[in-house]
Length: 196
Image 1 (cartoon, one colour):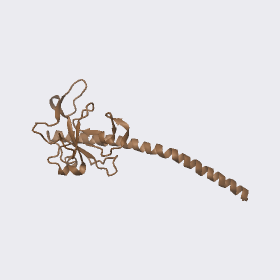
Image 2 (tube, rainbow, N blue to C red):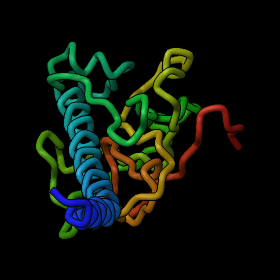
Image 3 (cartoon, rainbow, N blue to C red):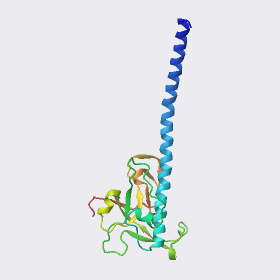
Image 4 (cartoon, rainbow, N blue to C red):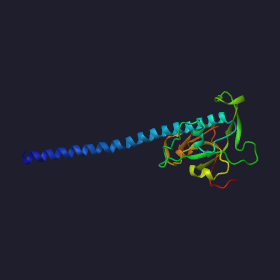
């Protein structure tokens, strides 16, 4: 091969490498976006699995709520514990009923079946309790809460989402809890935040 031919081969090789680099620069962000959208779908699926597990727990033990997520597995309401797909450590923030304040059902109200709301399986007499006030605590802090009553989960990631879910644009506002009214966001109390 002559020196002149080797120069052409080198130029062609540089052209191919440059074209591949530009292609990767375009493909990687698209690929990352697709992966994140799939994680959002997985977050919704996993969150709804916890809501269904708590509903089943309520059927087995009316009026009682699990004290740990593990209890849902032990009671065979959930096959296995799911991790939060949006947070690096996989730990959820837990949604709990606030501690009783002397009321029979603190932070909850009765929902009636109507034209806009169908009865969920297991709702007796057309009534179920809907949380108007919730406590959000890190999973590791649940053990320090006196008489925890877990009603759901929420992602611990505060990252802005691509998708809007129940009018919320960040993962830490995508709430998944038993008795949720998607049209009305409850009052959220964060663990460690002083209560009024």
